[in-house]
Image (tube, rainbow over all chains, first blue to last red; front, side, top):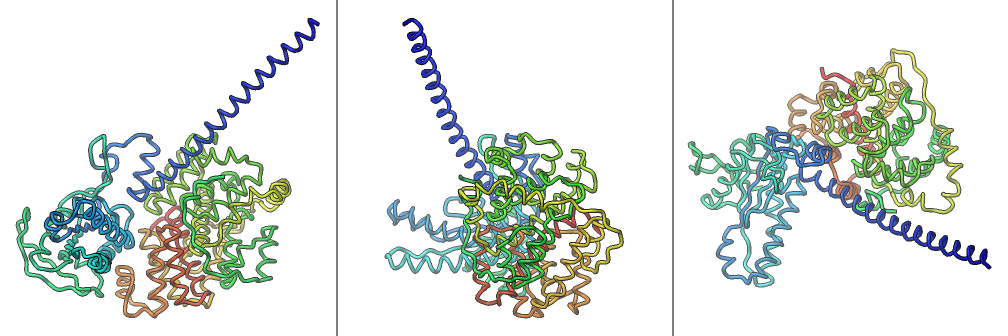
Length: 260
Length: 363
């Protein structure tokens, strides 16, 4: 009787132990699944990061496990900056409902980003209604000047197609101004400790922005600088524009309108 | 089972597999197992054979351990987003007895995986070479030397990386179907045959023997071939290059232009000298070469070159689905052998440029 009770008790203890072990095993399996999913997500994030910063910088980020200092990633490079802006955005933004305006703008940004990406450019940032993109800042690209102008021509074509859709909906057509310049600058992780991004800074970017401003003066949509024109292939059709003074630059800036 | 490349978009293959019994026999004899994917490359014999002959595991290596080579191939395929090669190496590691959990650990956390420091250094080298190309060669050489890897082993690791780069591009650009390979370890009959596969794989892999020095090789890659003198790699590389130049599908000039564009895009310091000299011998002026390399076009180019010069540039850094769609578009304008040969030449150029930067000093 006592033996049977002891055996019964032992069996109950064993069953309880087995149950606890099984619970632990299930918990471990669940945690393992979560860990696998998280790791996969991190791997995908690393691949995505490779498209936003040079591979070497991403490698350093992964290897260090922390954000490396700006000095560790900064390097001098020759890159091409493309600055694009919507013409007449302020007037349009006052006329349209916020939801409609957001939809129109998102459609515009998506189409312009696609055109830039197709030609090996990298959209660095959206500044209000403006777009700043680089060519040759992330991966070495000996064909960066041709790529940037092809991207601008693709942006022009994409905007024309988008305008057909907008006018069919009774919405105002959009107009674009693009400035492109090539030159040296500092490429690296730029920003504050809380928020850094891979950027290309220096007078090259400033001049691209100023040249974009000149599109209103010359009444054209795409302008390139003399430095960029010197690198372009002979198949682009360019028209010289009269030199203009721009803010922050002593000498008048010579630009060329891109016809095709 | 989810893998790191599941999210990589992969287009349908635009080529039809073509049975070639002579090629099948050749591959079976060399690899001791059938290789059905070679049928996709059959219209260009040198290309199909190169995928067999340049595979390091069939007697090309003297020193490098095969487990290290497998792991290097795994990470390089992961870096290049080649779903086909990645699944193939994974399946091979699994068939050889490595558990799925261990494979996943290696993929997920290579820096902290339970591997010897020299293996970790070789893996890190493969990753960095695929990401940065010749620009990072000097730093990569130093890192391997610091880990105690000798000169000969370093050359073999560089070869394994370069040939994986070649194979990844060949399979990715041609969009060879990856699903059958990815599903392999999940199929019951394959799991039952795992011990047999392990036996066959171990039987088919062997280390080569030192070869006599003085391998004859003609430009434009003679210095690269000479860098492997004494290794079976020299002869295999020399034979592949000879067959490539002898192939009548694309002109020698067109193939040289593809090599030149890839070399320029990778900022290679080693290859351009020999390639530009070879182009000069083909009657192309230095001005035309300069124009092609600066703008990817020149009035002197013929219609096929006009299509393939910009295409060569796209094979340097790419997303698989984007380049696969590009190939589909080119399929309308070129004959299958022409397009396949262009893929083969560009893929090999990408591998050899990376290799040249590691094993040949710039002139």
